[in-house]
Length: 478
Image (cartoon, rainbow, N blue to C red):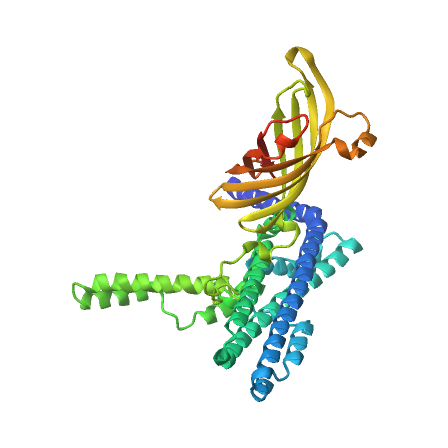
């Protein structure tokens, strides 16, 4: 009989040792990623905050410029009516532009909430981090950057609301003066700014590997889970399930009906309603679920500016407009092979390009190519420098994955051994290309899509020696 209690004691000790070792492993792992995590959070928050600040200032200046035009135009028609409508406008815009610091954050952004709560947890549990002074400074800096980003989101939401209200006010006051075309521009500014806010939120929802690792390690600990339930913004929006022994949790449930009681009441009402009551109940339930989904979408988009901003009539938005310059760049590589002639050996053109997306249907860009000579046949293979090329191009989408492509190129089609030879302008030949491109989406580690091009060089007939007029290229975008 004495063996069983002893065995229970050994198992209990082993369990406690296992739990302690797991906690130590989590702490060690977290210390390993903590510095990189804090650096990544600071860099991401700082980058978005700076972009946000520039966009906010830009939209306010643009909106104020439109108001100034409206005021000037209305003053020529009716100066008495213009004075009260545009009173103190400059002061309002400057106040909004300079507004920052300690703004009450009222938006729920899932990833930002998780990051802010994790930093708060690490601040209150310094034993989880390395004791190096550098780590503590990084933590303080990360908290400051995240707070600054929250301020920018809240400032942007206040600007968005102001612009929307101001737009409606001007429309009500000036509609009788025939200023419709001015309101189209204002509508676009408000719409694009709202989409910009949404774009920045989506950037936050694309965490890097190190951020995922740190949050995963924290989420595995019971202490962080409890901390998140009590201190996250999600917890302030909705009462999250807590410890049944917690007096505050029990007090929050006082007077609420249980699920069983609610089900009994529903069944009684259906039974007393007659044969059509069940069908009516199902219809009402579907309507309630639809309204609940709408409410859920509003909560997720709270402050995003996408739930209640109406797209201007007849306006087709350009999704590229809310992206930064670098995000609108598209990098590519292509290959083109030419058969041997009496003047040229077998050649392969290797090209690199960078394109800028003007909108969702058109891309302009520049590129360069290198012409590699391969010899005159399988039994006469010889590598040589057969030329270089400078390219410009434009692609315009027709439908689906089909594009019209055009371009102008300057090609040096003479073998060279020294770059000084390239200075001879007479050795460069012009090419004017026009044709069709077909994009094929591919999912690989490096490439996003494959592009097949069939082009006609309408300047090839002027070249001496004449080159082939039909060009076929295979390209890859990454």
